[in-house]
Amino acid sequence: MALDVLYFAWLRERIGQPRERVETQARTVRELVAELAAMDEWHAAALADLTPVRIAVDQELADLDASLEGVREVAFFPPMTGG
Image 1 (tube, rainbow, N blue to C red):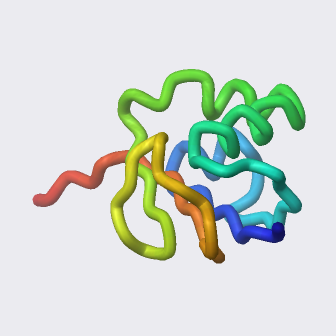
Image 2: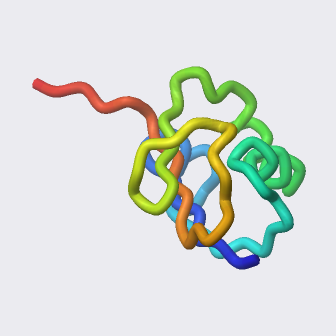
């Protein structure tokens, strides 16, 4: 399946692009992260520690075990602070 993957803030800077279209066999976000990290050193470095990262699946907050069935977009972003 094809997915749009979006990266925000320091994730975008480390990977070097704000979005990409990927072909994946992943069934969960966790499997997608593993596939992305295996692509190259930039993805691997950016996705090595997801502790501070939020994930949205089709614009709804999700966790690493969220299903990708029928999903069109996955976004990775750090928590935002107000001010």
